[in-house]
Length: 339
Image (cartoon, rainbow, N blue to C red; front, side):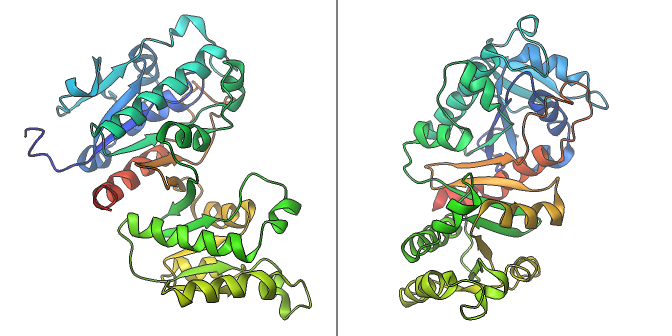
């Protein structure tokens, strides 16, 4: 089958921090038959590291072919093309340790993968984990993937969405204290978030169903008995969004709204702070939780775990989240491209 006849989307897959679990979960994911059926994967990494990681994979593992640019990729059956950056000599770093070389290498994989999407050589990006300390040691100021992708893609307000087995969760805030997260629950921020969530779902090809806003306080505040944020901020934001034709509902008690979304009542939930949504998704299915970054000029998915230095290069890391990240990217890529 020629490249022109192959309808599978092209997924730019980053290797992640070479000292972490990224190389081994990438190698394992690329051995999965479901991934091979769903996507044409082009890895951005270091072939030397991937060849070593392949030894940790059960079975034969994939065959890697080194290329200099995406234009050389053949996507041949049983062979994975790797844009080989030759920037992570295995002799120069220790698995499971913070290393400036690895931080710089991980950034360069993302940089090249984003370039492939912006040029039209790839349809989406799926990322393996990077390490914040290694980035800092390399002199890079990015807090993490989201900030990096926003800068590389020229996006001002990227939006995070979790998906696990059909449950979709957006976040009003994430990496701030709980006190600050409560202060960020304002009608202006909520309204803007609902508009962004609606646009993000449409960009993914999801046009049916309502977006539910989770309540902040127990029982949504019980009409002010346990807090006034629902009446002061959430309800006005929802009403304003509905007046513009957006299909939104809320506030809905946080102890039930995620279950309702899981069973199909809502298309997505807007979580009001980090743990509210994380706990729901990871309790439902920890390993299959995938993070999507939306609001970029390309689609990005990622595993929702870190570099796991404590078990890296031991063969104990599960590739399930990496597999799911690729499958989710492949599932949405065509609709996202047309948005």
